[in-house]
Image (cartoon, rainbow, N blue to C red):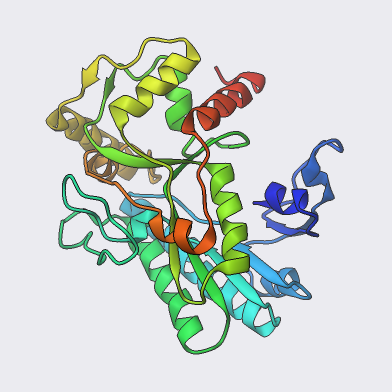
Length: 315
């Protein structure tokens, strides 16, 4: 998001726990860095002071109950505090980066949109991430309805592309490129170039209707097909087939047990497995119609992610 804003001539102030070391040749060196966290009201007020717009992109992705406090603090309380800081600072527009996980799931074979009712609890699939992101969405919508701020919500799919530092969603790309994914889960997900999402958020800044949500997706693919594309571009063998759900759940149980013993989310528990076996397809028709949104071909995002991971010596 920062790169997209800088490339269009915006002055960017970026909040980070600590100011990163940025190469002077990197466009991010032009950012004004503010050290602080989403749970520090004073720092948030300082970051929002004098700004025209706030792009709220920070979130904690976690699924295991051991991360409940941290996930709620980042996704719910952090959003509430940032909304308050932006409102007090007279920010003209607040663009909230949510997730498709905060929207309802489609029926098998169907495609969900912004009007699909939130039904994760009814389907017994709600997890810590979907619940806290949904709660954050409700805070943003309430702030708009109370006329405290002009805000628009963005719901991206699983993002792929370069400059993923941890990596987060890029771990899927990296693990396939390392040849560590012999079998695939049976689910379907929506994948999108992260740069398309950033461009879509800029469109939302300019054209989005206050209080409205917009899905920014790319392609709805089975994990087997997605992993196959990564393998082809990475020059490695693709997964041989589908991992039975019972086997994946058995592994998830072991990860949950390990998370409980170690006191931290290992990221591969049963909640993660459940998400990997659901039909998770979404439409961006509303964003295309109202914002002029367009998603770039997914192969370019995968190729650029692989090149970035290769440059960093990660595979």
